[in-house]
Length: 357
Image (cartoon, rainbow, N blue to C red; front, side):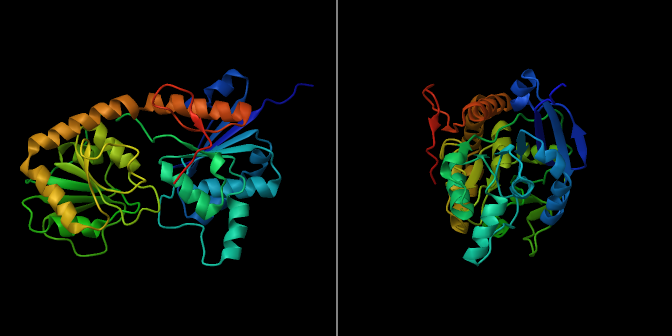
């Protein structure tokens, strides 16, 4: 009797339901070992809907040897199903992050302990996109620190050109929804000889100044085109308690544009302040306005910062580099149980079990 192949199940969120037997790039070493793969995309839905869809996959998850997830609520749902089904599969989250204002956190400590045990107790390795997020998730959801690995979020710009039509005047853009401080952005622009462009999933819920334009759900290629033509990309956050803006940040660096970024620890792993971006305190309208004025007054400075950021991103924030590092992290953990926390800059072996934040 032939023994069944070992099984890898990969779950991610997608615009529509998808299923494939192809191995994601960081897992191809398991394909070489004779494993089989189910790569499943689940449609975006309310967190309760994600849990319902994952519950229907319980038989598949129970017989898996390795489960890979992304995103906060999807990872939590899989953790719960693995625990309830008695599955022995190892579970790795490649990108544990909070993508909205919702979290599985209440004001009752006893309920939080129960939630953490069910929804986060079966996360065996968690990759975070900034170092402080390890501390945040460990503190909030009791995931042991030694289960975390830090890997930069990185990718290559897609080919093709967008159809974004810029304002007639120089402009700054603020793109994204997660933890963005749109009000400070707008207040800083009042009276400046420049426009602002806000791109988000829903329109701001307050009146905008006459020089700020709101765009909703535009194509990703248009977002890139918007960043390319801006004086600077702006990432302002409301708080430092969650990672936010990494995708937009990396995109702007590849686009060779300078940035104005809230000076929070969850952002500082990606750039050098003063060299690639100007940083400002959270909710400090005056500092944002001063940074905007600095780049408006000195276009050559803006271009130098953008070029320096692009060179940095080309070296450290590419798809190939992230894939290589992820594969190394997963293979080491899967084969030995050891989780390497951070890649060393000096070429030495990665540090292990030193998550801070």
